[in-house]
Length: 273
Image (cartoon, helix red, strand yellow):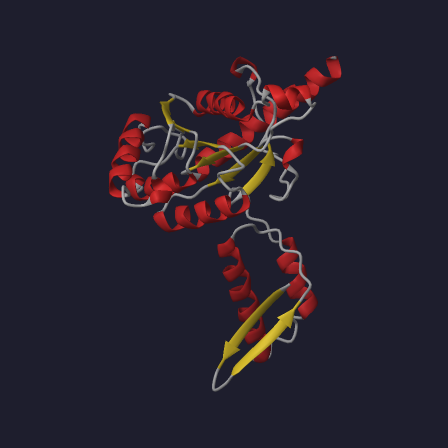
């Protein structure tokens, strides 16, 4: 359910619900409440067409691709097979059972504030103690990478892979992976007093392309989520891993295309068996 309040001389509380909102993240709760309050204020000023049914329908239909978008991660495939792409990727709820396989989380966070909100939401849904995480980062060179990366360190990844992606069709505006790696280390010094930013055993890697970085990230994640010998003997699997791609909406869009092709190849291989 969603509720909002507006005040003039006195406070007024309006209850609306139940509403199933697809937008994910703690910050979206405030956005939803603000949107509802705005609609109610307009209605109080004579916009009678803004019914509660219309508000509810709008909230439930709202989608924001590339912002805390959670997908089921496809099986690893050779990068040489990833030729061609389709932009259509299927979004699934972030609460999907982990037993169905590792998850892919996409978010275009490229400011300190958006990165901070993203990190809080991810670790709220996927605690570090139960969900090993591998991070892929690509950014535009005009962003404050150090501030963004300082926030992303709080994800406590098992590995972080820095790469590059075309920005508006060109690599000229994309930050060099080596420069991002240097800013990551500098951010570590800035946040040395923050226990949540203190990393142990995090592998820091550089890849020249997003495709290569994505393939490497899958392999890194598999190394941290492979079932133990005891689990194998019991017929159990460990599949709580999370692969995160962030830093740019361009990186998110490119990853969606890569993942769609990987899914198509996985389905084709399954049919051939």
